[in-house]
Length: 232
Image (tube, rainbow, N blue to C red):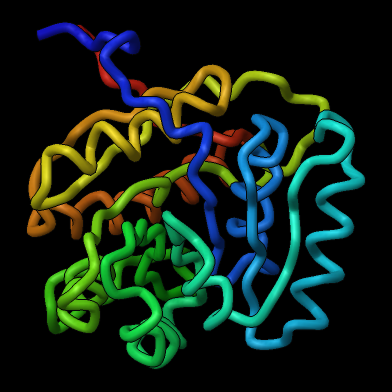
């Protein structure tokens, strides 16, 4: 069946929280959702730092006047959000996610973390005992609705206010097909993006690892490469 954006649910009223919202990927996603008019909560271990980041994002070009972009500590963001994007560094992933199990119960959790290492030869995928970052999150959040998405979206593209459209597909891995629609609709709030269901959580590890290839491509060709799925 061909991709049909008209079948996507209305997600405009959802509050999107970004745990790790002061990092490059988190800030970029927060900026794009704010530009789309989504209510955005920026999370950090420091509420003060989160509030500062939220104020900076709200003042960026393209964000509507009066847009709802606020900051708080990660726990408060988890409690107040309908959808929470996990965009923390891999080395803090388990501890940060595990500490939020109670406030994230019943919430949609989008994990976009890539377990990567870097050495003189460049980026490479790390081995994760659970199989992938999102599978680790799912194990730590048994009462949440967990999926993987936005793993391979370029942070510099997200953050560039001169770019109006980001022409790429967001691969979504989840055990719940309904989640693919909700997350796909959130992706579609960013002009040019499509959300594509890409299999169950067990298939997320190669998507997370593929980001190492994209980093290598970007370095070689001085680009901000993304993924576009053909024949959809």
